[in-house]
Each structure stands twice: as C-alpha cells, then as structure tokens.
Length: 133
Image (cartoon, rainbow, N blue to C red; front, top):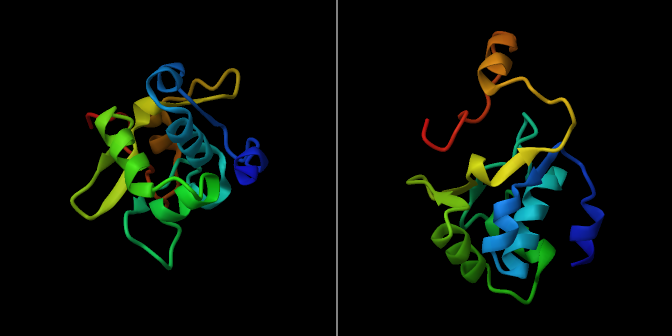
C-alpha cells in the first residue's frame, strides 16, 4: 500500500463521496489510486481504460498489484462492477465510470462539451461526458 500513499494528487481527480460509502477499504484504495496515479491516467488526465488481462501495458491486474498485492484482482474487479463503480467493455477493458470521480480543483467549471470544443484538430476528444453517453 505504500505506492497508494505516494500517488498524491498526480491528477485533478478524486473519488465521489458515495464511492467511499459503498466500497470495501481495499476496493476504495484501488479506485483512489486509479484516479490519482499518473501510470493509470490517459493522455487527457482521466482514469485510463485498463486491459483486464494485459501483462505488457498497465492493466487492471497491475493497478491492484500496486495497491494491494495480497488481494486478488478478480475480487476487486467483481466488487467495482457489482457496485457500479466500474464498467467492463466488450473489448476486454475496464473503465472507471465517470460518476465515480469528480474534479478536485476549486472553480473547475468547464463542462466536457466545452473542453471538447476547445480541443485542437487531431487531439483526442477525451472520455465520454457521462456514463450514459
């Protein structure tokens, strides 16, 4: 767990308050690390979609291993999926649902639509703006 305390605030994200209420301490720490550790953020600074079985790229297994090596990654994944905090995609990736994390910078009011319109041609538009889109 020493790595989770080193994650600090590498990103501008934090978990939504409700996530801390519904998750076990181990799953909460994994999700918290996912939103803060640079290795698990995408090019836009959002929690990255993680391969469920990847060994070469940072994947979900590596995320859990970094925080709780003794906890089976399948147990953490099952809990995150069951509680609606994460979503399993058909492409065998898992993503942290947008409703699970919030921006922790005061005054952050640019909506995803505004950020998408401000992007330069050729840049990624980023994640979807909600879990329903």
